[in-house]
Image 1: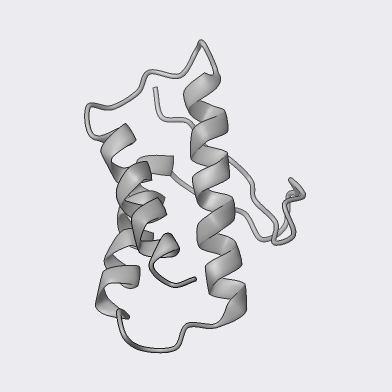
Image 2 (image 1 turned 60 degrees about the vertical axis):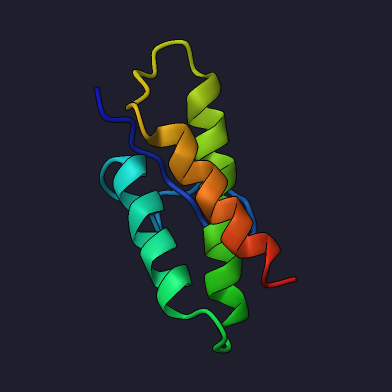
Length: 87
């Protein structure tokens, strides 16, 4: 089962500005972007989006109905590391 979520910048769940598709795909895409942009400036909105994505992934992980893919936790940790290196 793929968990889907809606994230709106500022941490409010909303039908607008949604993340579509499996959260793992979104984590993987955000991680690839973060790695590609190492050493380059990143928009504040992008960093906020990546942080909210991590929070949403952690929320999904706590859901008993969520069937966690094998590499889900690894994707969360890797994105958190990328974000920590930007502060």
